[in-house]
Structures are given as C-alpha cells and as structure tokens.
Length: 336
Image 1 (spheres, one colour):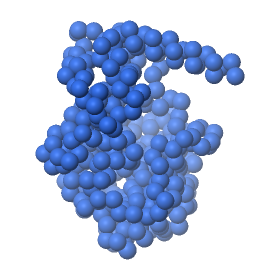
Image 2: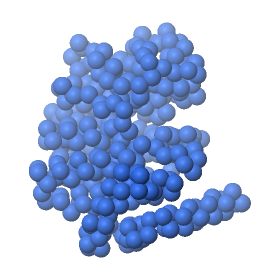
Image 3: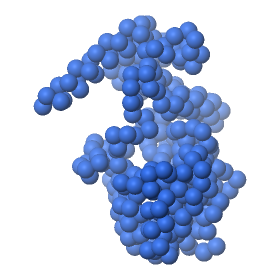
C-alpha cells in the first residue's frame, strides 16, 4: 500500500454519456499519487467497454465489473480493492477541478485531520450553474462534529462522501449500506461520532451534475423513489443519536424529522396515501403527534409550518391542490 496514495472510487452504471468527462477530470489532478477505481455495476449501454478503453489509456485506472447491485455495493467493492492510504469518491455524473485532491491532501497533512471537505456547486447537464444547495464558507475552517451535525439537521451541511477525502483508518470495519438510497447520510453519521470534526475548504471544486433522469425524479404520477422512505428512517435514527449523545441539538433534530416527513408527504403518490400503506400511516401519526412542535419549532420557516399543518389536517386534499399548482407552474414554464 502506498504511503500517500489516494484511491478514488467511482461507481459506474450506464454512464456512457458522462463517464469520460468524469474520469478525465480525475486524471487531470495535480496530485500525482492517485489510483482511479472504476467499479462497473453491471452496465448494459456499453459503459463497461468505455471503462476498459479509459483504463488502457492511463495506468492509474483500474476497472472491476460486477453484477448490478447499486452504488453502495459498487463503492464497497472499491473499498475492498483500494490500495491507497486515503480514500476519495466521485460519482460518474460529476466532475472535479484539477486542484481538488492536492488541496485536500495539503489540509489533511498540515492539520492532521481524518476528513477534509472541498466545497461544491450544482450545474445542469449543459454546465450552467444552478443555485447553491450548500453555501461554501468564506475561508477554511475546522467544524467540530456537533456543529457539523447541527448544520446537517438544518439542511445547510454536506454529508456527501464525494466532496471529502478520508484517511483509510476512518473506514476500518465500515461499509456502505446496500439496498438503500440516501446512504451517505447514515454512514457519515457513524463516522462523525468518532472523529473530532471536518476541515472545510471554501473552493467549489466538486461539480454536481443534476440530470433529468436522476434517481429521485418521478417518471409517472404513481412512481415513487424509495429515497423518500430512507430519509424518514434516517431522520428517526438521527433523533435517537441526538437525544443520547447531543441533547443540545434536540430541537434541531425534531425540525429535521418534521422536514423529512414533509418531503415524503409532498412526493408520495396520492394513490398510496391509504390505510393499507403502513409507512404512510406512520408518517401521518408522527405529524399529528407533533403539532405543537410544528407550531413552535424556531428552525422551521413559516412556509414549512404552513405545509406541515395542512398536510397533517387534510393530506390528500392538500396534495391534490399542490399537484394542480405544480402542473400550472410547469405549463407556464413551457409557454415562456
């Protein structure tokens, strides 16, 4: 194992139109000691052959082909075969600036940190900048674990593994949960409890590409990504963690729970809002049991509170009206 080698793990699935840009951006890193692991997760569109072609062009690239099992299973294969003392992750849709790993390695070595984070931005498929989801800091700073968790609970932080560089020891005995979405959040919560914090760099060197066929985008009125189930489960898990280890963050965690359930209620198909859906009943029961929190939590916006109250009182009616409103918005956009 190389003393200062970085292993960059890239899970790949049917990425024929974007993989080459992603890999070229990693190959262009100014930090020389890297290996690039392309984990082909059973692609069917020719991406597997593209992986082999790219590997033939650069000896730092290794490919591994496996049956389809999801991004987490692909990352777990990467963890097993990685040779580096440091671990980075890049999604095949995305791309990075040439300085990313050199800057993060500098910070790791100078400060002796376990995890360093570069800031990110979001772009559309044409490369046009979208509004920032995570606002970068004005300067480099060390964010302790409790403050980092607080920012996650306020939806201001970044739990993505792709924007971070980890010491190999951070992953000792750990793996990504398979068969789930929103997997970064649950695993990063585990790691966050065992490190002092995260050193954050302000440069937006990681570019998240928002694709129209993303995992969470609905394809029909009755399609529903399981990510909206997983975010509720993760909210429950973080509430237990906060109440046992970070009691000062209790109201932040309640806010997070309510917000995640709001997201679920705004996306679950109306056809699934029924007595036979145990998960839906569970979400609705929680909202009704936390009406006081909805009204008094200082970390919810007035709009959040309004939607939560309406969805608690008359969920189906509100969803139908919300659906009509969104159709009108889409129609107005098409006319412009």
